[in-house]
Length: 437
Ligand SMILES: Cc1ncc(COP(=O)(O)O)c(C=O)c1O
Image (cartoon, rainbow, N blue to C red; front, side, top):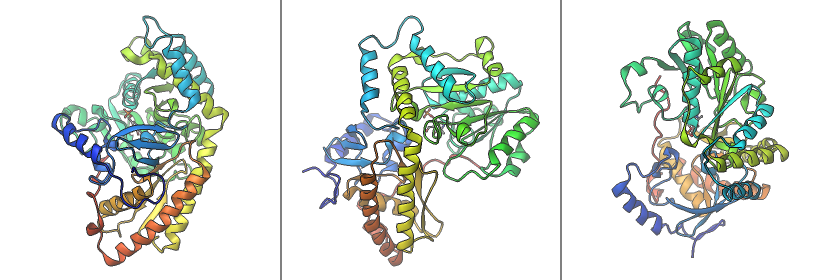
């Protein structure tokens, strides 16, 4: 019998997942195309590895176990898996064709829609991935300012100019490394000490989990103006979640350029670069940014259908409310179990993370422990709560009841100082360090 979304007698049977992982490791290095889905983020030996299907916020692994999914495909799922209005739009377009010999009208129709809803979208480009549009934004900023230096804050994908600033920078020429630098979030002095008249662009996630201090984004914008650098918001996580138009709408700070992907097409691969007309004009001749599948129509149809749903159902507000119910409920439980010096749930309600303080010895083991115990309740979790429109109050209520019991166990483990002997699988692995300070 497969496990389901209830308190199961045992951890899920994941034999097929494990057999497949063993075979995959012979020929795939690493086995995952997306770092955050890799086995290191899911305690190996107890967590499922391969998925078969999903619907709403439920996901089934290849062994037939069913889980409540708090990962939402690392962001792309905003409405819920297999959402009818989006899937119908994809099917309808599929019956007409996927990629064509000329531009398709949907390219224009999506841009018209984006022009109406994203504050800085005087001009719009469409592409496929987050890294694509981040790199296009940086390139056009360099061309516009005729400068090379880039300052960044957050994660911006796998391309050279950004990965040069991380701990996984092998294979990137020294010349490229010398042109990128990171700065600290919510610290205007730090940015001020790094930005200068050689800076082409400041690219940043407007918020990640730490709350944005009042005036911070305005301060960043003022520093960019002062030094003649362009401000780029990376809205992969904030776009269509915090507000439809993302952080620029939510905080009312309009950057020169902005990039979007993830939540905008409920799982289909598409990305956007929006920005000032005078900057974007450079893509006409001077700056090259084209790709074969840029106008692939299943993703365009999905994006248009998704955005209509996000708008008409006011999904950002829904995520705010349902996410707050989870966040506040979890922080209440942490307090009632007297664990506040160890744990807290932080972030804007649409996307939160369970943080561990430095007082927790072996945090990666504790994460694996909480993950494995949530699995017994049929909850698939890896630190984050990526909320979608598919979550109901009953789901959150159920999750909080599971957390209540698990936090009781966590307290016992912290008091005894013994965590590793309680692990069924491996501790989680550290994600690569996003920035080198
Ligand atoms: C903030 C941010 N920017 C850029 C990217 C890169 O997007 P992609 O993986 O689609 O290239 C990501 C991906 O997680 C992201 O979270």
